[in-house]
Length: 145
Image (cartoon, rainbow, N blue to C red):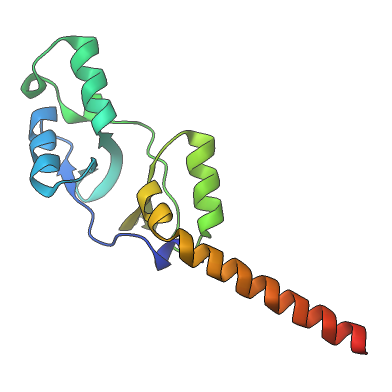
């Protein structure tokens, strides 16, 4: 299964010039756990709920006094839409991240999250069983020759 098969295509973004409070309000309004930070439409960073808590505690400043680009996670880890889900999971685990923006030719195509992967777990199991059955058929055909 490929990233494009289960990514969310509509990504909520904020311009790099807004404050953390603006981004947090956007997250609350859309009921999501992160926003992609962009500049002139180009993805630069991602701001997560954890980033908001961290910058609030560490700086002790009001969220409307903190530029979003100072609080967001850098560098932005991305993945191509034709990458496998297995490679997406590996990148998430290796980078200890839960969200991967999907980018092709510097254009934002969507986002894939741990939640997307968990929601499609049964699809992965079905695909694994199908592949296993196909491999068994190939082996049987080879043995008959």
